[in-house]
Length: 251
Image: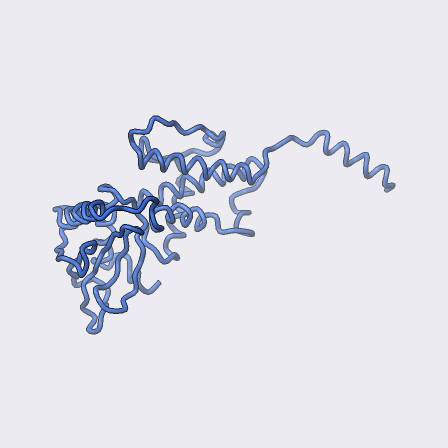
């Protein structure tokens, strides 16, 4: 085929190819949308509204009223990804990550990229979860005050000792820590294998959990630094104490 004919065919393809937005732009838009939803969650009095990205009608979505919208498939993918990562994740964080993943999948779909094609280049479920979780596990700006940390500690103790959770607690080695008495099913830890659990919240970081022993592995808990977040943390701590999550310190 002559070069002139090739150029002619290329011109026809360019003339008839539908214009689509750049994929990176769509991905940034999805991330920005989730950031806006997170800000609204953190600032319930905010009057700002999230603008639609155009992806809402591409897949059936679910989610609590007023919360982020996500597909069942996206939540399942994010939840599966959480099992292989070195943190524990509150349900609200999983939902936000699922909403981000839903938008990313939808953005790819507008470019003819199927969900299973992403796996050839990037682990989207893990990436979506980690970028959302980092907002809770990294240092807040501005840092929390000592009074804020103390209030979160009281919220945590209230949730841990509630009738629903029913765990016993003691004062921790530091003011920002709470020791949770182990149960018979709690993973072994410490020199004799009988160490209690300790949960902390920090001025320059998020929640974490470890065995109350020197040199113990510390596992981050990605959860909001709020009263509701403290309740989610308490539920995760109960699951660890009951052995329902295996041994999260050995992942």
